[in-house]
Length: 346
Image 1 (tube, rainbow, N blue to C red):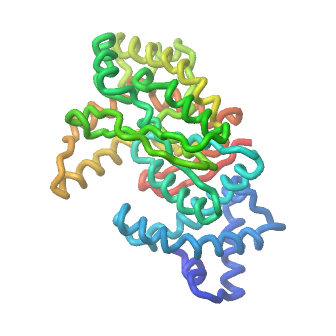
Image 2: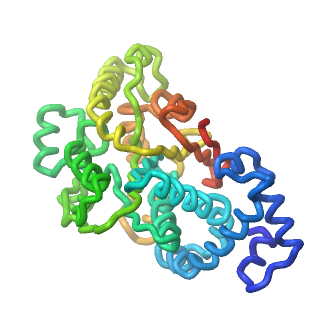
């Protein structure tokens, strides 16, 4: 955490702090552009963000200690540099839109989608906006429906790829929120049901929602030219792999009506997609160390490779982040999970 950032937590801040904060906000040109920070408005931005930081800090501290099990000061810099300005940006978008905002968030395993959604919820609450997080996982077909699906296509051994979701359910929920209907039942999915196969659980009843944070590992992903699978990267190697990838690509067309409901799309983008594999291994090792059950490295590699065969990040995500007609904000993530860049596509 920067020394100048620590000063903001006291009642009075010095002129030197203000100057350091001003310089820091403008130093990263890409991030300043992403959040609309200019030489003319930087003082106003710093003042607004500092007041918001102080108001959100009690809830943020509790979240870090109880949910993340980390010291809040470890997360304070990312709160200041990313989550606070992003929360302010979403609030502004909601106000300009004049109806509930559907914010898409695309990110692979370990990119921090869930954490970001929870922190944004805390921030937006302080700004007076009611949010709800909806995961693509919450739209999985029921256990019984997925059993039938596996009988029809034995390659769908795990939930997750295109075809395993109830798209109509997602459309129904998003349309009701966009149309100011209240209350709305938000579907929820219990991954522990049926020995880990998972099934629907009791929905969450929400009212007067302003902003939906709709996240998932391929939220917003578009179908690609099937010829690209002829020279696809590993683990798409065999003819069977390529046939599976082409079929998943075809199923992705069914999701386009769902993506049309998005008002904006943010991509959490690792500088190397293979980081997700290492992050998953770290997570499983931590679970095992805590006395919980977890997958071996070989099991993890088999699991992650399955998803890369269905929608490979190099084929589907890498081109997407450069498409300004689809993606509004790209958050590049380093191998140590720190934020590398924040880029606005415009």
